Image (cartoon, rainbow, N blue to C red):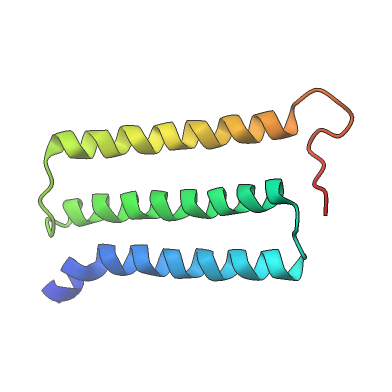
Amino acid sequence: MNNFKILFPYFLTGAAFVVVTVFSAYFMMSNKIADLRTWLALALTATFIVCCIGTLALIIGIGNETMKIDVTLLRWLGGATIAEVAGIVLIVFQFFFRAGVDAGKVIH
């Protein structure tokens, strides 16, 4: 049981990476997304999801006392995750609420 407790954060991060990658690839292929802007938005969103789940896995590992990480690094990770969320929110708001008739329109 202790080995699973130690490996759980790694399994969670790996599973998130595989699920997000497969789902994103399927979505892009099934919808025939050729627009670079939309493709980059989906790729950044997938990367964002994996990074957030990886950070959550580290926090779970620290909470289970299976990992020992310096508090300074943990604070930095939390700040980086918040900054990442702020960056994604800014990109989404600029995409959907920019001036013009074509605001938020996805071109296929």
